Image (tube, rainbow, N blue to C red):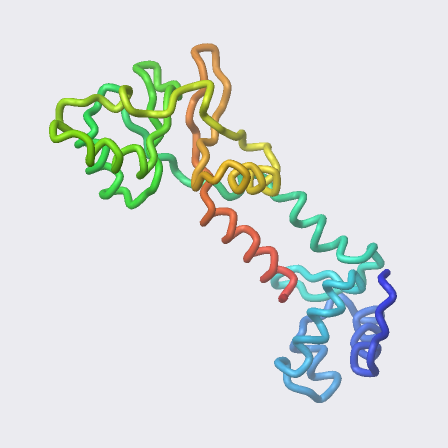
Length: 212
């Protein structure tokens, strides 16, 4: 445990959980004759310090883990496959005009381009399409494979990859979305996408699990 000086209420909470855990926040508050909102900061401190762990719909229980390990374990255990969303793909022969329409209809910032075998060949971002729109008036005649980012310059990930590592990669390369792929004989099959929004939701779910 970290060297944290607990106040009287935090010490009482810890003893209650040691004796009767798992126990909900409402039950702890009732034992102390306090409102649930009153002890919320204490529960957050004890959880972050590693004294307590929490599970949704189960409650708090005594952890005995190292400092912040319970939260860190949760972050490390998050995998791409658990939080990925449905990819939006287009064929490499569709026109820039059609790709722009698809992007707006699907309300996404990135399109993944595939060949006739449905294997990943490129990525189209808003910037790619905007740049082309400003530079040409024949968007219905330019195929997307002319302007897309091609392999091997595409950053991708797999279902089993750590969400933390993927987040780090996205920040370092300043990209908003990555294709989630599965390797097959013909190439890379696009099976999902992971975005900054997916990652934010994942970390928020971790905070909610620990009632932070």
